[in-house]
Length: 254
Image 1 (tube, rainbow, N blue to C red):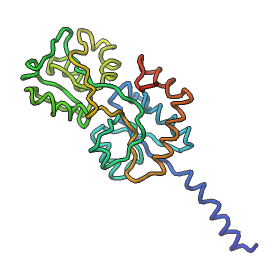
Image 2 (image 1 turned 180 degrees about the horizontal axis):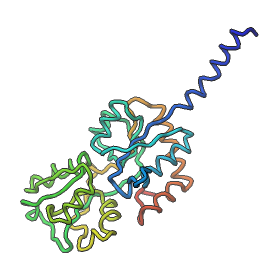
Image 3 (image 1 turned 45 degrees about the horizontal axis):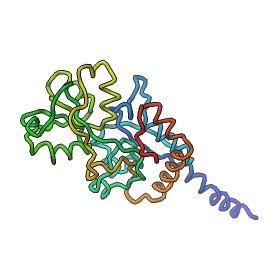
Image 4 (image 1 turned 120 degrees about the vertical axis):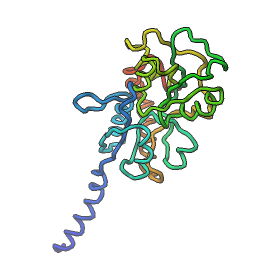
C-alpha cells in the first residue's frame, strides 16, 4: 500500500467519526418552570433540559443546549440556528407544516388561574383581562373560545410576567398549561389566594400532546430521537425525571 492509498483509506475511515462528532443544537424556553429555567450561573435546568440530556445520552448524540423566548423557537428552527427544540411545544397541524414532531412526550390540559372562589360561566368572560403565553396553544384557544365571549386576551413573551400581572390585579386570570400554573405559581408564595377555576380545557383540537420539534426534513435525527424516547419511557428514566418535577403523571402511562 503506497502513501496515497494510505491517506485515502484514513480519510474514508474518518468520515463516520466526523459525523458522530457533529453537535446537535437544542433550544428551550427558560421562562417556563418547572419545565425549564435558567440559574444565575447560566445553567439550564428543569424537566425539558433533563429529557433532552437523557435522549442525547441514549441516542449517543453530542448536544448543546441553548435558551430563547418561546415565540422565537420555531423561526429559529426554520432558520437552521438549531436542529431541535425541546420546549413543551404543543403538537398542532399548523406547526407540523414547518417542523417535524417526535412522538408525544407529555400531555397536560389547560386551566384558568384566578382568585379563589371565582365562578366561571359564559357571562364572566365579558370585559375580563386574560393572560396567555405568546405562541402557546392557549393563545389560539383563547382567541377561538374566550375572545368571542368578550374576554380581552393579553399576550406575554414570558409566562412569569403574566403571573406578576395577575398578582398585581392587572389580569383577571391566566390561561396556561396546568402543570406550570400548579408548580410555578400555586405551590409558591405567589399563589396564595389563587386557584384553578372553571373547566378543564382538553379539547383534542388543541391538546394533542407536546412533542420534540426537529428541523423539517431531518428524518434521520427524528428517528433517533423517537427511538431514544421510547427507550427512556420503557426503562424508567423518563418517570424518574418526571417525578423530580411533578407530583402527577404528565405522560399517559397505561
